[in-house]
Amino acid sequence: MAELTTASDRRRLVALLSPAYLWLLVAVFLPLSAMLFFSFLTDLPQDTPDWGFTLGNYARFLTNPTYGTLLWKSVTLGLTVTLACIVIGYPCALVLARAIKGRVRETLFLLVILPFWSNSLVRIFSWAIVLRGNGVLERFLELFVPFDLRLNLMFTTTAVVIGLVHSYLPYVILTSYLALQAIDDDIIEAARSMGASRVTILRRLLLPLSMPGLMAGAVLVFVPVVGSFMEPRILGGRMGTYYGTVIEDQFVAVYNWPLGAALSFILLAVVLLILALASPVLRKANT
Amino acid sequence: MKTFLLTLSAAAFAATGALADEIRVLNWQGYGTDQDFAVEPFEKATGHKVVHEYFNSEQEMLTKLRTNPGAYDVVLINSIYTQQAVSEGLIEAVDTSKIENFSGISEKFATDPQLTSGGKVYGVPWVWGLTSFAVNNNSVPEVPDSLEILWNPEYAGRVAIRDDAVEAMHFGALVTGQDINDIKDLDAVKEKLSALMPNLRTFWSSENDWNQYMAAGELDIATYWSGSAARSIAFGLPVTFVVPKEGAIGWLDGLSVPATSEHKDAALQFIDWMIDPDFYTVWDAAGAPASANSEAAAALSDDAFNKVVLGNPDLAARVQFMAPVADETRETYLEIWQGLKAAQ
Image (tube, rainbow over all chains, first blue to last red; front, top):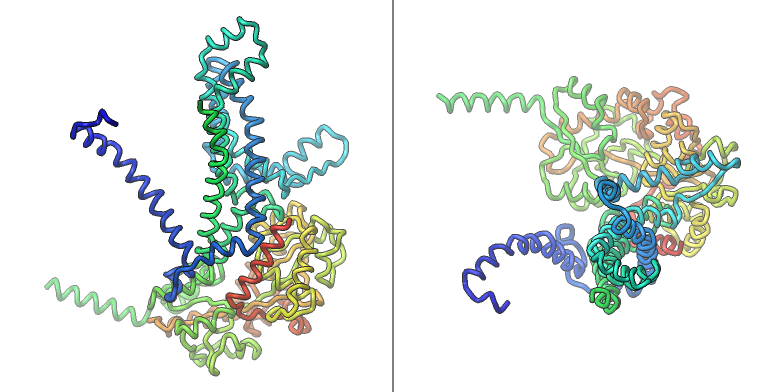
């Protein structure tokens, strides 16, 4: 920053950056501040004239064990989905970046991004059609087995995980792909000429060098999955109550916005805490 | 000259306005008042124009009444919210002598304590219905007579209820033999509902959901609303609506006139048409809840769902009509319900 001494440079900097900061202010900071404000209220000002300030909404998280249980359930779901995304997505990215070249790679890449072009609700409902009893999946499998097949996948935790993995897999593939693709071919050639096996190259070179991308993908998956509510609600049935669905209930079903806002900020704090605890690992990955 | 013309057209406009008003109705979307067969004959007969506005929750309806004085002339209020609207001065007493069809309304509904206050009628009883359950005829060949069938392990994973804390608690109260409006033994209800959870396949959230699950054979037994059951049966689904021996949850919807309405006479004319047997028989054919007007109910054909199932005289004794639920009670119910769901 020491170079930016002249006034004209500084002016230009302000002019160039202000749209982005203005956007962040209006679209992110203001709504979040309003929610933070709501989380300390007893009632919404537009509904009840005698509203006041309270810490009670936060206290309810501590006094009612239900919320803690659900938060733990959601974090577990987040870890499961993230792990599944890595296990499926990283090999995909590896093949895309290192083994396939030219037009085929472009086509495959397009296929990875394609689900992103459809609405997530549509994707989840298509999974409901596939997974439900006597649905597409069961009918298809029945072509190969002689007996009456009952998978009973719909309305289970497995169904929720399947739907979420499908929704968020592209993040891991894209970030890992970018990191893997940036690795210089000469390094791999050098390792190979020194007699390194494929496994050694993967373990000692590709994996560490692409770790920043993989970790970025993992964070991009984990954070939204912990707060997810639509997928559990549609695919989870009676198993589909998570922290996110309880927050949604506060906003749309019981009109307790203050409690919903407080629960949301507790979720935000917990997610930030998890990321902070994981930051040594993340930072190591970046060096 | 120009001013004169303007004044003249304004006068002409005001004159037609006195004869033909534009009335604004606040209701759920697709709930009787806004259907073509409701609006068109009324507009043709009276010359009034009917405009609709919708709400998505009772809270929203009350907020709209509070914040838009003079904007509405007829409003649908579920009986459990009528007293709140009266105490806030949002609606005014209805002059029932101006409503010809009011005489047909059964005594029980006309004097309902939730729709009346100080001997005056604040909500004209319009339609009522039950929340109970329905069974799939293909998988439950014998129609059960008890709510306990929801707990029957034979149907494990084939049962659904609605994801609604108050409704779940009410069912728990019915099956444990308690008054739904004054649940004394909450622990018994909680225990009973906890035992129900493993039997559940999912929670249904809309009529469309319900129909799809039943049609796909995902469910054998599910709680349901009588009006929706009538529609599903008319639609061809092989289901039977059951009012078990433990009873069922009743609800009553009334039509009220906001205190700030500027077209009260036209509003009463519209309410009169809404409880008219001629309108109700058409609505019933398209799938309607039960009419609070006995004459309208009697006008139905003998095989109509609303006559056969809800017209049954010994049913009335088993129905427990919902009373207003206090905020604290609602919170308690919600906490119990969320705890039960979180334990899954």
